[in-house]
Length: 569
Image (cartoon, rainbow, N blue to C red; front, side, top):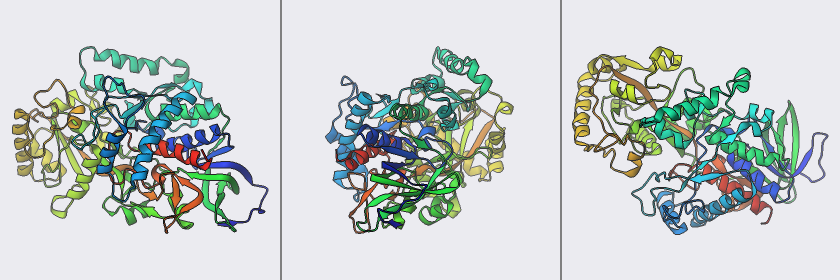
């Protein structure tokens, strides 16, 4: 819609910068705008704020980080460029890659100096450690936990809860420091478990009111720290406010605001400087998935929030914005439970010894311990009528069941105490032949697949797919198991199976942008006044996923870039 400068209504609001979406990218953009002295407004279509960022692990991937310990990290901006340049698409310009690396460092310095946001650099290996320029740690950053009582009570109540996959027993928040003790149970691990449980259950005042955890970690901590920073600058965030369209000046063509729906009424929000769209991808839009992601068209295989239906992408396209990489997503193997509203990413369980993933022909077809985006892509690429991977099946034995979790399935906890949805899809049988019959795969082939895998596991070398050959494979493996921490035979009955689906944690194609986060039109020219970041935009990563935090890192960086460019700084 085009408007003239004189058009106004009683529902008009005027600000300098409108930010559409309250995920980490949007809130970072709003912070940078408000701290540049501009009147800023954040709108969010859902009744809860934080977007998918709030439900995630909250990590960001920034090469040559100023927070990396120089005694352990030997990184450089050039190494980061070399690594990312080899992974991302040729259509992604050098200028965008260099802007991400340089501005990501600047953003981290600015956040720590000027806001409540705090990160620490982790010894978490890049997802492609065999590619030139990769690092075996200190590019991934973890947000510091936050006491939720620092937020206004209504903000804590309306913050999107962490995804169940990011919580212990579907309710207890934990930090990255607590992951390995809880997962591998070394001596003294029970102290960590006690601390995690005590944080939750000893908050008696909150337990009397709500299941909601006031100890915020991961994506909840990142979102909470961003919101706390915005609150201290009195930046408003309107919930239940959906962007309907982007408006342009009739004379100049410059984007000058949006039309939104709030409280059942249409409102015009005018932007003197910019509209920054950070409203998420299209992963929960069945029609768009069928058009752009036909191999994984079902929205229920996504781990994203239900409000991500492509609103920002469609609004941009209606005013002439170009799209790019619409077939791209942050792929992964997903668990889907009938009593949950979205899928769960199978992050680390695949790397633990004593499990395999097979197709419907009863065969392994990939390295199960690889980075989850590669596993998701392998699942899609290997799918065919005579050996479907939709779904595949994770197979494990009783020893694995006693020692390790699988999604919500907790070791040492009787099955009847678990959620109904898990009990409905988990299959348990006394032998492999019966398991094969129950899940509909050829018995003889599954038995042979397990036999061959067991032989390799005993030797410590996966001759078929190289599981455990890279530092990333071994990152989540069990260090107590040698010589290969990701390999262990399946020998002990009963045997278990759980279906695994090729899905995603969000789409990564969208509005085409330049190194300043400006949205480009179909002729490749910037649309004045319009910016995009996060999954609304086509990612600087292209079709790749370089390391943990490769989604939120660019979202926050280009949110920061967009606001600074819009303000002329």
